[in-house]
Image (tube, rainbow, N blue to C red):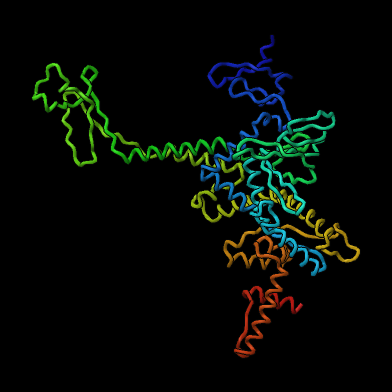
Length: 497
């Protein structure tokens, strides 16, 4: 055999391995674990296959438990919700009267008694709960009720019906009937059993009456039910949670007095004499000098221990968590937060400086765009449904010649205020003056509401102030909304131009 046809490698355990260097060597190393690591799966299946047979419910219970008991997990979920689950509704039609009518109807429908079938959640609270359950459970169903309200259906309540009729063109996948392309046809809805435990079948509902919201990372034909990214962090979070419990237990032990007695191998057990008062020192044929384990009570103050030869006593103590344990726990928390793209500086504000924190925040903002798009699509479906209802029942009258398709609106995510207003406001003004942005975009990015409404309110306030000044204070009463030299220069330049 040609000696040049093989290449000799040294394996991780020091043994020699040979592998071909010819055509057979043209391979991916990931396909050749050679026993150095756990072999990767060799087949690809639909994502739902990995959560069959109650495994989805088990995963949901695991996530809910860790969020219920571990503060860091609960905080990470709330932090995610704060950035992706808060929006404002704005109608953007040329007819301002129509805009006011639509926004008024949306505001009324957003109240708890209108939005929530249970009458408890407002619009924003309800959509926030949908996001929260998606993070914990993978997906959630929002059932559209005839009266315009929504009923939340948690993930484990969407499950296959008791009786399934086999159809070559359709298939039931974890409570969702889909065609070969993964398009949902029906959902099987269950309810909680007596006392909130177990399941009771309710009914099947058409897919057009259900808003199915969740995390989907594959095409519809390859993933019917959602899977949350937090799944990858459940084991690390539980490890840190249990590590915290053990560290706290050790800390508590270190605050207690624990006394240990030692004796030689051949010595008698450490005991104390308890003479019988009636025996008068006679120990024959009685248990007057019975040897019992020593009982030491340190709560009564200083105690003198009279030990026998070969005996010794020591106090036990537990050291506080080691630096290595703290660093490792910090690393595990950092990795777990990455499941939701949350920077570690959010968790530990002193982890970095201002520049590092701002850079992390900007990257996190970018990572939220995809999830906000999902939120917008969920809200769009809700808005179209409500507009259809209002048009049909006469609550909303469209101008002559217009239809539902002609209406324009948007869901605007809540922006972040300025970190350093004295610097960033000036920067925004320069960007507006340079044509790089617009007042509308700046107001949206900063969470300052609709710039048109802001101008209307400002003009109304100025008129009120002028009227009040003329009547009460005279011409000396004036208001100045000039933010500084730069704005004045821009105004003057535009006026002269």
